[in-house]
Image 1 (cartoon, protein in one colour):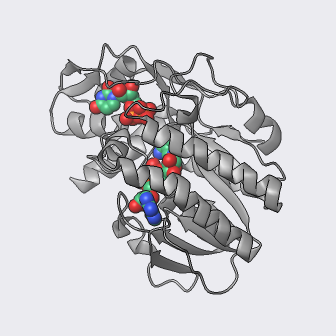
Image 2 (image 1 turned 45 degrees about the vertical axis):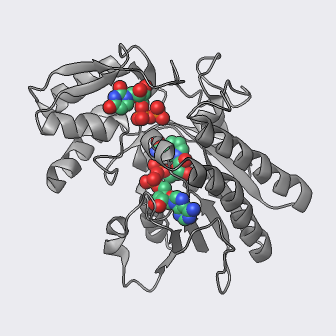
Amino acid sequence: MRILVTGGAGFIGSHLCERLLSDGHSVLAMDNLITGSTDNIAHLAGRDDFHFIHHDVTNYIFVSGEVDFVFHLASPASPADYLAYPIQTLKVGSLGTHKTLGLALAKGAGFILASTSEVYGDPLVHPQPEDYWGNVNPVGPRGVYDEAKRFAEAITFAYRRFHGLDARIARIFNTYGPRMRPDDGRVVPSFISQALSGKDLTVYGDGSQTRSFCYVSDTVDGLVRLMGSDSAGPVNIGNPDEMTIAQFADFVLDSVDSSSSIVNMELPRDDPRVRRPDISLAREILGWEPAVPLREGLAMTIDYFRGRR
Ligand code: NAD
Ligand code: UDP
C-alpha cells in the first residue's frame, strides 16, 4: 500500500514509518516539524519507497497519486509542548484532523486517528476501558490537548457514519523509546537525562500518581494490527503495567546506576492521578498485547540517550 503518516518526523511517527517500510509498503511522511525533526527520518532519506513532505496539516493537503491508508499522528504530544503551543494543538486536532479526513475521503483511503488516554482526563474509572467517557476540564491548561483529541475522535466517527469512510481510532497510552527529545518534558526522557547527567530527578507532587509505560515497538505493532483488522475501535493501545511516578524514578536510578537524588516539585494542574489501560478489547479484536517489559525497553531507551550525549 501507499501510506501517508502525518507527524511522520515525530517520535512514534518515525518508528511507524520504519515498520511500514519493513512490511513492504511505500510511505509518505508529512510533518511541519513543530515538535519533530528530520533527524528522526534522515536514515530513510533517498529510498524510492519513502518521501518526506514538509507541510502543516491544518492547511489544505495536496498529495499527488494514490493513497491507500492514512495514519494521522500529527499533534504536539508532550504536556510541555502542548502548553507551549496551545493554539497549534487545538488547530491540529480540529482543522488538521478535518483536512486529513478530507484527504482520506478524496483518495478512498482507510484512516486511523492516533488518539490518546488523555480523552479520559483525570479518570474516575480505573483501569480505563474504552466505554468510559472521561473526566476532562475543558478550560484547564491540558484542555487544549484533551479537547482537541476529543473533537478529533468526534469528527473521525462523523466521517465514518456520514461519509462511510473506513475511519478508526486508537487511544494510545504513555509510550516511550528512542527518538524522544531529551528535553521534551515528558517523564521518561526527563528522568533518563537527569540520571545520566547526575542531576536531581524532578518528581512532580509526591510521586503517588500512576502511569503505565508502553515501549514504542509495541505501540506501533498495535497501530499496524488495527490497520489490518476490520474493527473501528476506539481501542486502547497501552501497557497495563502500572506504577507510581516515585517508583518509576527509583527504577530509572537503578537502571542507569546513577547517584542522582530525587527532588519533589509542584504537581502540574489537572495532572491525572491514575492511568492504566484496560486492554481486553485490543486482546480480543487485534490479538495484541505488549511484548517488551519495562526493564528491557528502558535499557534500549537509555542506550539511545547515552549515544546522543
Ligand atoms: P511527537 O511530538 O514526537 O510527534 C508529533 C509530530 O507531529 C511531530 O513531528 C510534529 O512536528 C508533528 N506535527 C504537529 N503539528 C503538526 C501539524 N500541524 N502539521 C504537521 N505535522 C505536525 O509526539 P509523539 O509522542 O510521537 O506523538 C505522536 C502522536 O501520538 C500524537 O498525535 C500524540 O497525540 C499521540 N499519542 C502519543 C502518546 C505518547 O505517549 N507518545 C500517547 C498518546 C497519544
Ligand atoms: N512528571 C514528573 N516529573 C517530570 C515530568 C513528569 O514527575 O519531570 C510526572 C507528571 O506530573 C505525570 C507523569 O510524570 O504525573 C507523566 O508525565 P508525562 O509528561 O510524561 O505525561 P502525561 O502522562 O502526564 O501526559
